[in-house]
Length: 210
Image (cartoon, rainbow, N blue to C red; front, top):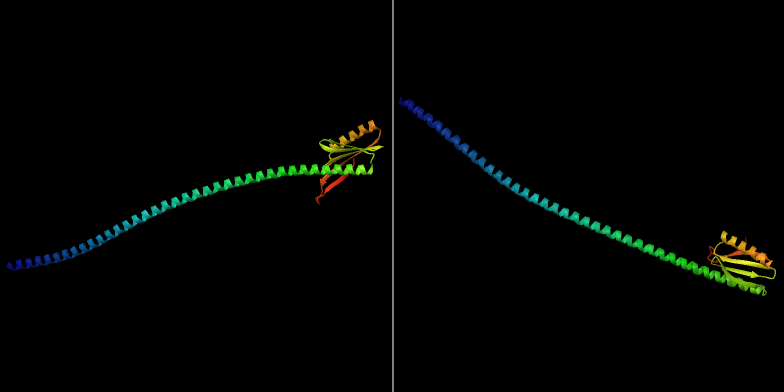
């Protein structure tokens, strides 16, 4: 009986020792796992912190990018506004210059036409007075254009000085010649002396006979 008890005690001791050994090993493994879990938690915490910093950096970059985009858009709008103002100013200057040049052209044309008309009248009067001292010369205007009427002993010549030959002027000259012919009983001739400028830049004093 005592031997059986001893055997039971021995078995229980062996079982207890094995259980203690396994418990100790499991505790070691649990401790190791706890250490690894703690390390993982620490690593996860570090990663979470780094991720938060990255998110903050991304948010900061996004804000800076948005500011840069807005600043660029404002600068582009400012440049476009300045370009529009410059274009408007250039157009105004060009328009004013065109108007000024047009006015100068009109003044120059009038002055040139008046000078040519005056020279033409002086030329005709001088030539007539030298060729026929007995001729009677009358200077007047027709439709705001110089008109020279030269009366000889047996004929009358009518000269209209104009920049160009117009049908209306020819009709008026024809009517005038018929009236003078009727009342003077003389041969009446009429023509238009043009003072247009040729391509060479010289006055083209040409008689345009009806």
